[in-house]
Length: 442
Image 1 (cartoon, rainbow, N blue to C red):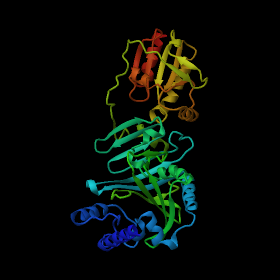
Image 2 (cartoon, rainbow, N blue to C red; image 1 turned 90 degrees about the horizontal axis):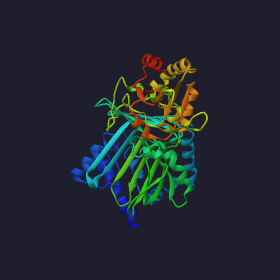
Image 3 (cartoon, rainbow, N blue to C red; image 1 turned 135 degrees about the vertical axis):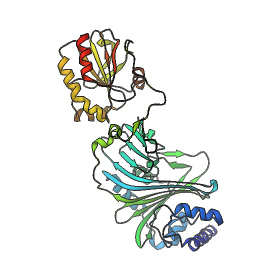
Image 4 (cartoon, one colour; image 1 turned 120 degrees about the vertical axis):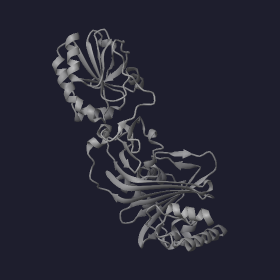
C-alpha cells in the first residue's frame, strides 16, 4: 500500500507541474526530477511528436499493480486474448510503413538521445534470413536491408557502406529495429507462451480515444532488437514493458521500456501507420540504385583485384544445378571466366543477358563460364536464377576467403583464366575486351 501511495503522489506531482507541457510532450510522471534537470528533461522530450494530454498521463506510466487498482473498471480479465489479437494482427502484415521515433532517457547519467525517421518493411516468405526486409530513411542516413546485405548511405559524407548479413543475429544493434514493430511481431508469441511472464491488459484514453495498454514484466533479461530472443543482464534487474495499442486497428502506437527502481526510460512511437503502402520498386533494394547519390565506401582493408600473370587460387564450391562439389583445378586445360555476383545487385542483373550471349558464342569451344556467389544463401540464389535465367553454370558456397583471394570488392567482377590457370584479366565486365582475350587464347 505504501508503494502505491508513493506512486500516486509522484503521479499527482507531475500531472500538476507538467500540465502546461503535456499537450506537446512525451513525459513519464514517475521521473521525479526538479529544477534545472526537470526543465532539461521537459525541453528534450518536447521535440518528439506526442498524442498524449495531461489526463492521459494519469494511467500511462504507473507501475503494473498500481494501474490495475487505479483503473480497475478497465482491466481485462483475460489479458492473453488481447495479447494474441495484437500478435495475430502483426503476423498478418505483408507490408507496413510508419514514422518511427525512438528516445533513450537516462537522467542519472544526464543522457538523452533521440532518432526519428520513416520505416518501410516487407514480410515475404523468400526473405528467410530475417523474415523481412526494410528501408529506413532519416535526416542523416538511408539504411536498407535486402535479406542478403545491409547498406548504409551517409548523407553527410555521401558515402555508401555495405555489410554482408549472414544471419538475423547480424542485425542486432541496428537502430531502426530497436523495440520496433518487427520486435513485437517476433517476441509476442514467446511472451504469450511463457506463463512465468506477468502480463496484464487495461484500457486507457488518449485524446478521448480508447487504447489497450498491454504490460509485461521481464526479470534479468531484455528483448533483443529483432525480438527473436532475450538478452541476459549481468545483475538482478526487472524490466517493465508497456505497449499502447489502438483498439480500432489493433496496431501498436507506443512501446515503453523501464527499469524498476530506476528513472531510465526507453520509448518508441509509431505514427502515420500504413498497412497497405505502395510497394517500393524492386530496384530500390539494390545498392547500385544509389550510386548516383553516394560513393561506394572502400573496405577498411582495400582489396586489390588479383594481378594478371599470377596463378589463380584453387577453390571448392557447389554446383547449383547438380548440387555436386566442383573445383577450379578440374577445369584446367580450358579458358575459364569467373563472374563474381550477388543477388541484390542491379549491375549483376544487367550482366546476365551479356553473359548468356557470351556463353552461347563460346559454348562449343574450349571455354567455361562460371558464375560464383559466396555471399547469398541457396534460397536467395534460387530466387535470382528463377527471375533471371542463366545458361551457364552457377557455383555457390560459404567461402568469404575466396573473394579476398581474388580481390573482389564490388559486384559484378570477372577474372579470366588461361588454360594453365594463370590470370589473363581481372576487373569489371567488359565484354568486348573479354572477347579479344578469349579469341587470342583459345
